[in-house]
Image (cartoon, rainbow over all chains, first blue to last red; front, side, top):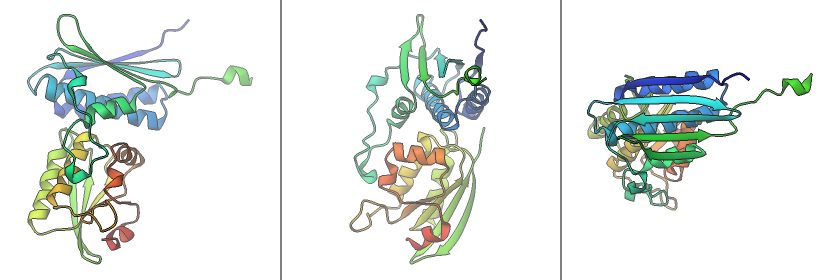
Length: 150
Length: 123
């Protein structure tokens, strides 16, 4: 039985590194042959998650964010870890999408998008401090059916 | 770090229209430059802006925050009979950006065009 490859990235948690993090998701996603629209969704979810880590977690002070990405079957799993203050997404107000733009308060779009763009999004405190975000998107990789076609 | 590039053009529809083309990724690191560029244009007298997103490969919630602020800066009034902005419209978003526009409900309030001429004449 062959092991599924795993991909890791550890970078300084800063807004300047968001592009590098998106490139990591794009390159690994391409290697895993994730379909294009699903890869767009994962890129967005991870960008929003790391943005929250930088702004609300580390509050733009120094810190590290670690990304781990792998596939199992037709699903992609992404894990994002930080050592920032604990974060409770339930405290974030959802955006008021049914309110006219001019009357709509700012904020809440990031967490909303993370949940919309994935099948599972878990926000967990890490023992000893920090947070782990687990993202799953299923049915996004064309599994090999060539054996049945021979 | 990414930076945004801007191109600004003036067009005449039923009213004068400023076309603001953005190139680059609009994320939490870059969104303020879009906000500031639009503020500069509005300060200079523009009242109708067509935001050309054809050169934007990626836009996260920070980009929508900027668009929301631009809409507010234009002192938006709705087009009579609709909830759509009469002052801010979007041109040529990529498929990925268009899907997020819909997910966040911005398409209810902002018209989206693929054809530049049609967009300009719609103001």
